[in-house]
Image (cartoon, rainbow over all chains, first blue to last red; front, side, top):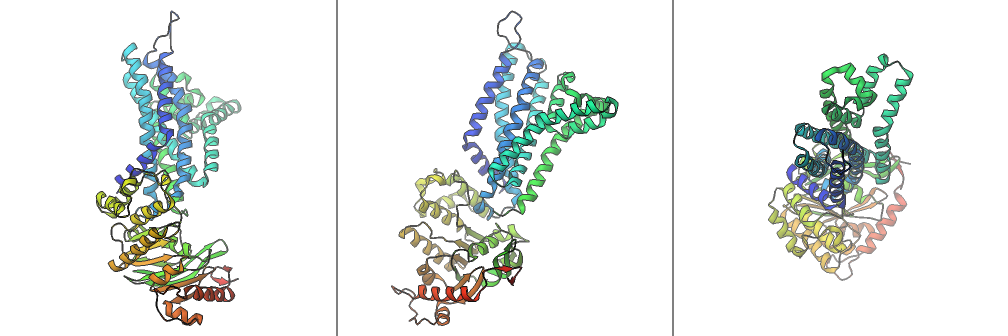
Length: 269
Length: 259
């Protein structure tokens, strides 16, 4: 039964134009980032995996949360349009989880197509050094996608109308992508770095986008770019920081999904 | 069997459904009639699990619709008044889901749609179908798998004469199979022809309940008892009972008591 529900939701996700546009757009953007790179002699050449990955990470950190939050919010707000399906012998949690899983699979596949195309181009032109780290980066991107979809779904279920859910998603995206960094910079300006360490580490864990950034940059030893929160986490947690960040991303998926399920269970359809 | 005891629904201070007791036996057809806002859809939605009741209990095939909702819905077919599925849903996908939910093979769902004359529309989305075709698809799928109880909310809405005949046939078939059928309708001739008992609702309250002869007697309307008569007195009975209900039944109730 759960398989049938997942297939039903996957078919719905595949039908929309959003998925096709995201797949095509992300693949083109990823290839562009990979191909437009270093050129010592002025000609277009290909960057190695490490440098390209850092550039691709920026693309992932901006595009994936925005799209996942928006799609999750719309999918969540439209879940109340399921009166006929909700009268089947299915729990509300099953309905919502199937919707989240279907979009995670669909957008995850699109993400893999884009990053895969870029990875293939880099591998062909610049060799396979750091390819494993690149694969792990893809995994981090998928974790971020799953987390942002879960948050979006929660916003959609809680927001009730599509317009309100979308507005909430945009606000949350702004806070996660820019707001938390601004808060970290403000904290550093107000408190001495030694005192701000734990607070900044918690701030990092409280932001899935920042967590993915710190994880991704750490993979390619580009920690220096991870910002004040990343530096604080390294200082406070040392080598365990990466595992903590990964666990944090999983929690960012599980907790919003649970909240959304509870809310949806009480919702009038 | 549908067993409803003290079922009620409030939206804030507004009473949409005053405490109601009703039992629909296997093989019995009960019709809900009343003006818009009478509480007919509210009752059906509470039974189908898409709306939480404020008070009371109800069971379908002995399963509590709130506490054991999933188990109760295994025995239940429900046709909502509005579409209740995204209009971008492909008919074949919906049929496959409902077949899996009811534990019947996918080909049974397709055969069911073919019986309704929709075999060439399996690849269409619900939004691409006419209103009547959509209703026939949903009715065919709601009755799939031989459910024990059938809840139909305005099943003949937007149907042509042929489609309305199919609805009547579906209700008769469900009754013959031993299913308990509870349906809401404004088509009083359908109600007269199909229902074993009729529930007249006004302002969230039941104002009359009984067989057509009972209601005719209660309304003081003389009637020969011929349900298939060209002009059965159902409309006169309905008008008398609804008017009387409006005069005697409070339209606004706070927490089950008269406001």
